[in-house]
Structures are given as structure tokens and as C-alpha cells.
Amino acid sequence: MSKRRNILLKIPAVLYGWGVGLRNFAFDMGMIKSVKPSIPTICVGNLSAGGTGKTPHIEWLIRQLKDRYRLAVLSRGYGRTTKGPIIATPGHTAQEIGDEPAQILSKFPDLMMYIDGNRRRAIAAMEALPEKERPEVILMDDGFQHRYVTPAYSILLTSYYNLFTRDDLLPYGNLRESAMGKLRADTIIITSLPSGLNPIDLRLLEGEISPIAHQDLYFSRIAYSAPVPIFEPTAPTLNTMTPMIGISGIADPDRYHEYLKGNYRNIRKFVVYPDHYSFTTEDIRNLLEYLDEEAGSVILCTEKDAIRLRTMESDIPKEYRHRLYTLPIRIDLSPESTKRIMAKAHHAISHNGLTI
Image (cartoon, rainbow, N blue to C red; front, side, top):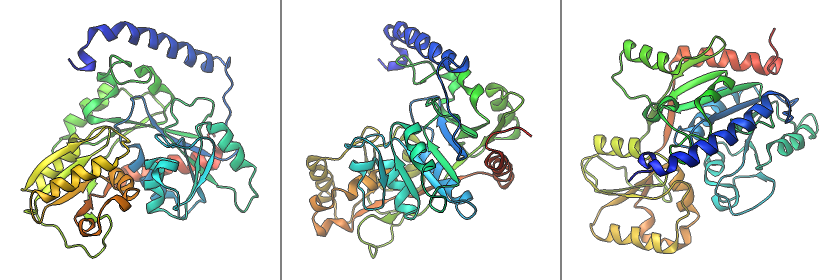
């Protein structure tokens, strides 16, 4: 029986909802203090426990803002084996800082990256930096429930395939807090939008989300690029008939699987791991055995998996490394949506959340 259908989990979900509701009430009433940083902070988060595409949306924001502002990304580094604050560099491994920060740094190696579960402490450390080193904008990853920090601009993500309006509280469902939490967002983005939806479909979605007066609603899609080698840059280009083993260790692998099945004709199997899964030597041995079953076959994984596989390079014999590939993704928003989101972001940055 699935978690969402297990009626036995309804009671703990109600109790959990009371607890979260009391916490939010305490913040709303000022009983628990929330601090607005002196550095404009943009929060990207969700109401659900993962699966909305926060990391690629953070990367999208970096691309939009990096030429205008000195940026820092603040992440708790989910899944890392270390503790305490870290100023991350491209030399840190996924085990040390978390797979998502490591993925971001692999694409933006010059980016300032702070890893700390205590966001307020990390922001204070950045505020204390000399002016020429201090970031001009902080992107706070997965900080929607971290209410000790009041962002200048808050972006809430919800997947088209699991809208928060159709979900339930943990552990009965997947929500960290009730759908009322959406009221704290400035912008809501429905992510992973499929192709083929017409304007009426979009209007129905807008009606279901019901953004209030100050909120904007937008839609984003996943844009896939051609597979790239993980270890060997000169590895051959894949074609639609290349035998593939698709592996994934992400919160919602369904879209990834659908894309592979729709674009490659020779998918031998899918191997699914939990989100943020740390590969073991035995896992690597099993993957290599899959490759041994068919000459010319390759492994194609998500970007997050590739980051974690790179830390296992010493366990992968050299003769296999040219057979491991990853599928890069980017977020696609319409030019008009991009223009409007950036206008709101620039206003929030300029006035640090103050209404003028």
C-alpha cells in the first residue's frame, strides 16, 4: 500500500499539521523572530519534500543574475557527511557538501557557495565579509520553511505532476506544511510542465493554484541536452539505438524515464535509487555487470547521479569509464515569463523587499 493511501498515517499527519501550524503562527505573530538580511536574499523552495526541481531553477537564476550581481548560493548541503559551516569550492566532493551544491559548483566554479544548515549564521558570516568580497545577492536554496530568515523575494515551486493543491501533509502525503504556506510566496512556478497544454489548461491550473493579488504564476519546462561523458571527454557520441541502462537517484524519476523512452529506442533497463543516494562499491560492481551483459551498452544517468559517481571514480576500471554518460537539463521559461520574474527580482534586490 502506498504511503499516500495508508489511512493509518492520517492521524500522525493531522498531529504534524498542528505542530507546523503552531510554528507558522508563532512566526506570523512575531513570537519567534525572523531576520531580514542586509544582503538581498532570494529564496527558492517548495511546500513538498522534494521533486520540484529546485536545483535547476537555482541554476537558471544564476544564469540570469551572474553578469549583474556578485552572487552567493546558500544551501544546507542535504545528504553531506560533514557538519558545520563550509565555504565550498569545486574541490569539495558531494559527500562533503551535498550532491546539489556540488552540481552547481561543477557548472559555476567561481560562484561563492556557503553550506550551513543554520542559514541565519551563514548569512551573518557573509554580511561580515569585506565590502569587495561580500555578495550582492544571496540565493537561498530550499529555504521556504526556514522562517528565521525573511527573504527579499520568495519563489515557490510546485510540480505539475504533484501540485500542492492535490497533496497531503507528511507522512500521509508529501507536504512539509499546508497549502496555506503559499501565501508567503511572491512568485509561484508550476514546474515540469508537459508539452501540448493549451491556454484553457493553463487557466485551469491558475484557477487551482489561486494566486493572490501580489503573486505571479508562471510555468517552466525541463529542457534536455544531448548526453555527455562523465569521465572521458572523447567518448563516442550516443545515438538513438545505443543500448542503454538508465539510472536515477532523484526524488521524481518519472520524467527522466519518460524522456529516455521517448527519445532512445534501446533502453535495456532502469535502475532506480533513492534521492541523494550515495553509491557503494557493490552498486558500482552491479552497474559494471550490467555493462558486461551487452557489448557497446552504456549507462546514462541524471546530473545528480553523475556528481555522486565521480566520487567513485577509483572504483570504476578505466576500460569502463568511457561508457558512463549523463543527461544535462536546463529550465525553460518563456521570454515574457523570464522578463517579468527578473523585473520583480531586480526590484526586490534594489529595495530589499521594501514596497515603494
